[in-house]
Amino acid sequence: MSNMAYQMELGGDSPPQRKSAGRGKIEIKRIENTTNRQVTFCKRRNGLLKKAYELSVLCDAEVALIVFSSRGRLYEYSNNSVKGTIERYKKAISDNTNTGTVAELNAHYYQQESAKMRQQIISIQNSNRQLMGETIGSMSPKELRNLEGRFDRSIIRIRSKKNELFFAEIDYMQKRSMQEADLDSDNQLLRAKIAENERNNPSINLMPGGYEQITQPPQTQSKMFDSRNYFQVAALQPNNHHYSSAGRQDQTALQLV
Image (cartoon, rainbow, N blue to C red; front, side, top):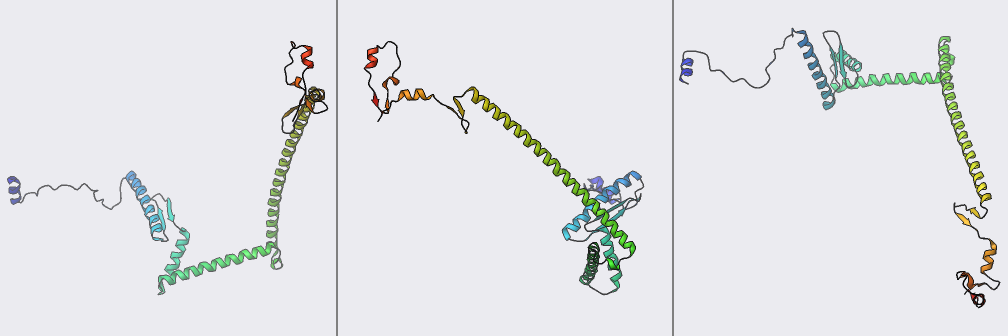
């Protein structure tokens, strides 16, 4: 500590200061190294484009950015249109001699834009009238030939689209008729199988719901009932062969209540 104070008294160097940990200041001059210059250009260009985008979004400003590299390559950004912004800039520069506010300049700009839109609308309406044949009396032979060519091209496109739709409909109908023919053949095959089953098993009838009904011969049903609507007791008891004939004769009839 005493040595440092002694050097300061003798006019020696001041004590070394601590360097800050932040980024050092870069000298703004042309970068001689080609590789470093290209890398710096790419980084700074992307940052500039990002800042222009943020300015247009955050502040609702009309921004147009044009950058040419050292090799002549174009980089641009615009939230509306570069050409439109340049035209607006030219008009603002030309009207700079007039002492007007920004609102007046914007009003003049939008008036010019509305005039352009009206001209476009009038041109489209005239074109539609020509297509309808309303204003062909004042057209020259060259304009009539151009109009005829437009009609021919339109007719070709319309016929092509119409034929495409017709072919698609024909293909759909053919597929549908083939499916119906397959269904008819399947139905005929099922009817033939049902008829064959009925011929082989006459006592089994297929009901409409898909259930089978087993019909008993009428003779077995008539034996269980007599003419007085009585049910024979013998039908309720098992037919055992060890019963005597006398026992079978003593069995009486039970009347169904």
